[in-house]
Image (cartoon, rainbow, N blue to C red; front, top):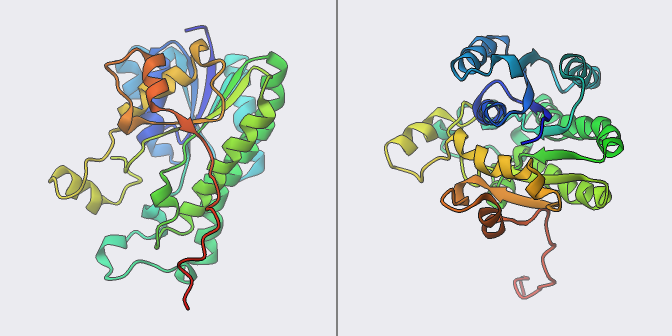
Length: 283
């Protein structure tokens, strides 16, 4: 892979940490951004064990703050001289929205969620990603090459009862991907989605679900390292003309060459509205 520089938000744990290490192993310089300083020693230890300490930098920042988004880009540019790849991975999940989700007899309804939680989830999951993309897009376009990669979620999580405001925040990012891809067409910069495709075995998943998956009581959760193969394809030159697509790690066939796996896996990012159907209306 050509020498590239990436910013990974939420890069100090979970999916982001796996993607940071995967990129570094492929020769990409990475600024891993997180909001918990205590995650840095583990990230540094893993980078050292992989012999990649020289290409991974760690930064604690609150991406809900616009000035912090500016600081992230400034730190990356100062450390690595450039930015080529943005991975919008940071997200607040149900461990924040409903930490007692599996101990309640009923799911939280949207009117039971506090203003602060709704604002924090939207600011982290969508607004910060939008800010980072808007700040970086002009320089990526000027360079004539770049990648914007968003981590959203599956549709059945976006629209499930009890899924607010997480589902809405990821739906916004999914639709943004479609729009960004259209507006970036022909610039050398692409916008795509790389997703787990199912629940992921990360600290962002409620512990009850992680335990049940390990015990075989629910479907297998996707391991963070499974995000790396589709990610490496999307950031490669082989994907220069791949724009506005979604790739799910849980159905990525690692036995195939990457481009072939991508053709079998990829679907267009975004949504189509339901067709008109009044048959279900009450009499």
